[in-house]
Length: 50
Image (cartoon, rainbow, N blue to C red; front, side, top):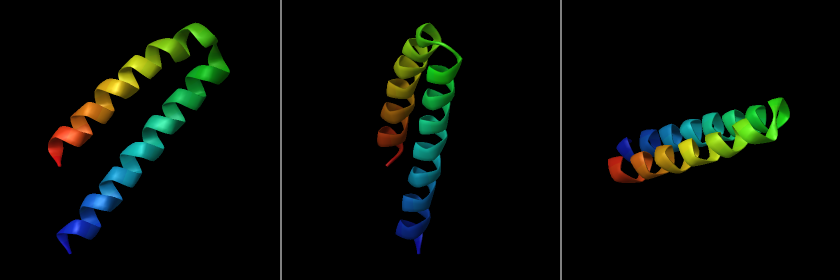
């Protein structure tokens, strides 16, 4: 039960990150570079939680 929720929360956070990066890329290339560094921080935080 707990593992299913864990996977679901990872999938939701991954989808959110992907959406942010795509949005940044559409808006402009400079902001997407900043978002990529934010994405790396979020991924590290998610990995540390598990």
